[in-house]
Image (cartoon, rainbow, N blue to C red; front, top):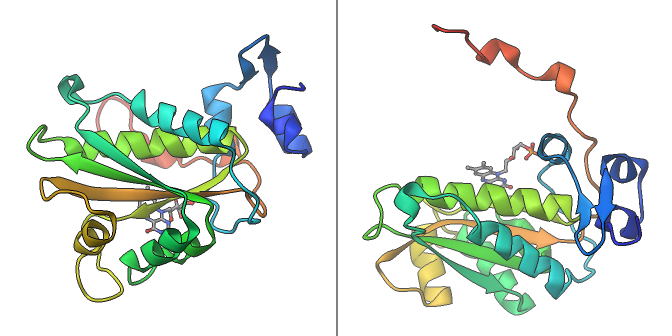
Amino acid sequence: MGSCPHAANGASEREASLAKTTQPGKGCIMDVLEALQNRHSVRTYTGEPVSEENLKKVVQAGLLSASGKHLCPWEFIVVRDHAMLEKLAGFRKVGAKMLAGADAAIVVLGDGDKSDVWVEDCSVVMANMHLEADSLGLGSVWVQGRVREASDGRTAEEFARELLGFPEHLHLEAVLALGMPESHPAPAELDALAWAKVHSERF
Ligand SMILES: Cc1cc2nc3c(=O)[nH]c(=O)nc-3n(C[C@H](O)[C@H](O)[C@H](O)COP(=O)(O)O)c2cc1C
């Protein structure tokens, strides 16, 4: 268990119980359904740094994502500078304040010239990175960028473009805020899932 982040981060029975096995050189192996059960959005962070090693794994999860026609129409901007994170918190009128207390952010941009399903592709990236972050014991939350307004009345995309310098052909999908979690909600109960939303054969 020594190399498992769930044990290393200290802790909890929840984490220990979800850490299934370790393999030499491979670290903690967690079933994906259990990882999804455990996953939650986390918006308050301790201020401790996210290691470069873990941040790299989160980015790797994004780069491993499926995409339509395998076009991979995304670009990421990794932001670690705290002054920049504070400024980035203004890219939304509401719903992005946690960025000011985050230790890192990954801005996900999509290229609409490359793919007509860039929104879906970038959403897969966001979900994969959020899940990987959670499985590593990091706190993270999806902060929506597309079709949202900035604190100064511009679009979130215009605000972020000026701040981060990305070109016109790239569109802002979302930002993943990251930090060491102050706390983490309990895993979801599989028995409480919304099976009423699942239809058999016909609606
Ligand atoms: C498309 C999308 C947009 C989201 N936008 C925001 C956001 O702008 N700010 C925020 O704090 N959380 C945002 N979230 C996180 C959701 O609020 C969160 O997933 C939801 O409340 C369920 O909580 P859970 O992730 O802990 O299960 C977003 C999630 C998704 C999937």
